[in-house]
Amino acid sequence: METIIFLTDFSVAARHAFDQLLTIAKRTKIKNVIIYHSLAYFNSKFYNTGDFMLPPPVIDEMEIDDVKGKLRILKQELSTVSPTTAISAHYDLLTVMDGVLRISENEKIDLIIVGLRGSDDGGKNSVGSTTVDLIESHAFNLLLVPEMNPAHLYKKVLLAVDLSHLHERLPVKTIFQMQELLSLEWHVVNVSVQGQHSAAQLIEEQSFLHSSLDSLEPTYSYLEGEDIVEKINTYVEDHHIDLLVTAPRKLGFLATLFRKSASKKLAVHTRVPILMLIP
Image (cartoon, rainbow, N blue to C red; front, side, top):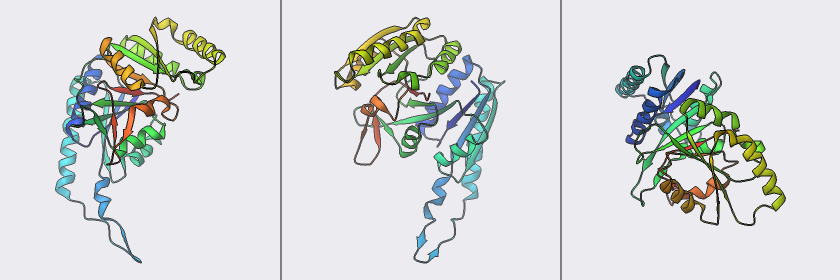
């Protein structure tokens, strides 16, 4: 894996996601990690007042020093477990999305890792607007790490697909790179709404799926019905799945994994990390 961006706001959830990065780095060769922190909250007081614009806020140098210190500690931790990895830390006043896009102008980003903050709402994970922006951009591979999931090396993986335009969006090359990196046990689960596809479409999509992935010797399963979330969660628990992988097309069936709350945040209904791959 060439370049990983780790997003941090120094929260408990971000710390947990960093622990997961450390776990992966111990066992694999990661060439480059960029630890990124956004200071966009400093711009929250920069607004228009009639025909006048107030000057930008004065940046608290003590807070900047604190950020630098925290980033330095993260770099040291990662370099200890993965001494051959090139590690850099970066902060700026951009929003996270703009900051990531700027980094991507000079770096080919293979993966972005972000933590999901646990909530008291039935053990769900709250997903902030930043993560939603990254998901909806459909521009980067994302690893979403729930705070409630213990950091560990992934062994059993569930690849959830809906049999629709797979030849356009199934990232076969990335899947086999994952296999080479982690030696995974694959479970390939088709999730679809009953009656959504014609028999001819199903045959064509299934043929492509098997020809692409059979060499992984996966376990194939098919889930049907409206409540896909419950069925996936049951499968994850029954088969002790470590990681849920999907290749959404404008979220696709994954839209059912997310529900908007009154606070305009999202709750993701899973206890295992989600790896969202782009084609």
